[in-house]
Image (tube, rainbow, N blue to C red; front, side):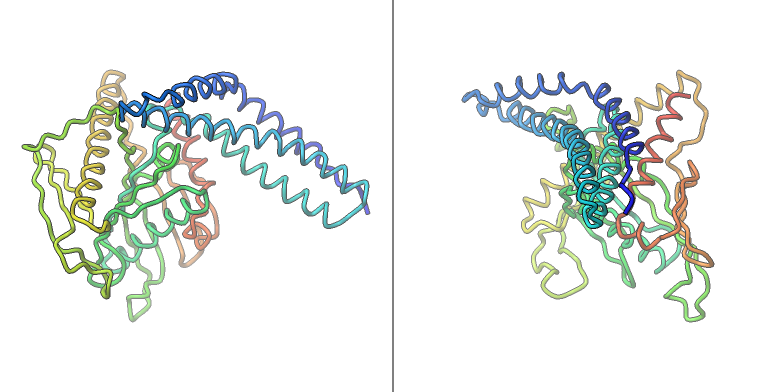
Length: 369
């Protein structure tokens, strides 16, 4: 049996990782960790709850970044040893294991490379994702639910904590809307490229004639608000309504008015939360979503001013941005950068890495002119 030769692939990965390490500045990350650990060890830290949360969350973020970089470097070293062992023993199982480890490292290092492009003000934050059904009747509400599952599966695959805050079920199939929070580093930076209008083309399961149906759903992604953000929500600017939670039936439907809807009067923004157990919990979650949307609105206004000053007249890249075609052929295509895959089932199961990477690279190109 011929020796396993993966030297070229390993050298290419080492080159990419070296570039990532330079951009990431690992010594600076280590220095930040040491400084933050000293602050975290201060017994008086928790006398200031806001500062304590900033310190602990920053420490967690820097440690996560460092651990990912070091794990990739160690993985490449271990892979070299595994290949030597496989060739020395001429063992087919060990060679297969080495090839599998190479693919895992490619995925990890590709993700680290993409992360170096996420240097926006809010990119390192968690995200609040809202999905709304559009035109297309039952197909649209069903599509909205498919998208919700897709993003929750993506979060699960990447070990990111996701919490559903509000779901408005449709009378027929699927959902009218849903809002969920993904509290993980760089969730916003990655998922922000998913904002826009999504389009589904398929043979409708809701049409007795089995005709092809086009339906739409909108995805909104905003950065998760942090305790240090200056987002003031005056009591006089909001109206709070309570109502009974709705659901598909059974014990999931509350028998008390615990759901909360908050209307921000100056902007007309409406948020609701019904998935927590108590009215107070739902109100706190709804206020958090409202603050995040107001923060994003402020960010959009600032971006609009910058574009106006720069003379930017290009249409927003976040408009209709992806088509999911299931009939007469199978394809998912990003309409902004032409990246496509031919397995919609895998995409709907949360396999979004290719689309997100292509979207981030495309956005960076647009920013750089």
